[in-house]
Image 1 (tube, rainbow, N blue to C red):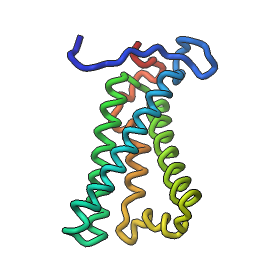
Image 2 (image 1 turned 90 degrees about the horizontal axis):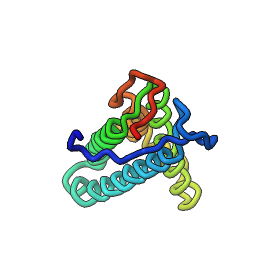
Image 3 (image 1 turned 45 degrees about the horizontal axis):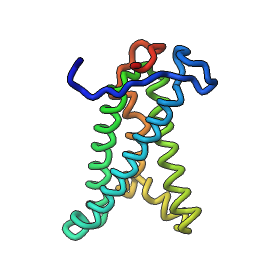
Length: 162
């Protein structure tokens, strides 16, 4: 026992074949969603921190940039904790996890703000304009690549820890 919390996991492929090598099982998919929800809660708290603590003290762009960088750091920490704690390996699997989280994030952002709240698309896209100093694209890139950067890339067919 390493002294770390390592939740047990039984891999099950989405085609319901238990223990098939290389699959991302239903339990892991549930954990991936749970970790993404943790990232979402962290992003919401980060936005609150930006408005409460940073915005009154910094220029709007500087507050956005510092907040984005803090969120990138939090995403790296959460991603590393998850992929290492679960023993997930293999470049393809790690990249699939990150891309899934990034797509969930984009779907949430555009689904909530554009479709439900009616925020103009141009305003949403402005947050991705690096030429204007906007760094939300970096947050999405960090989300997509963090598992690959921080996970164990060897042993592509190794299943997550049971």
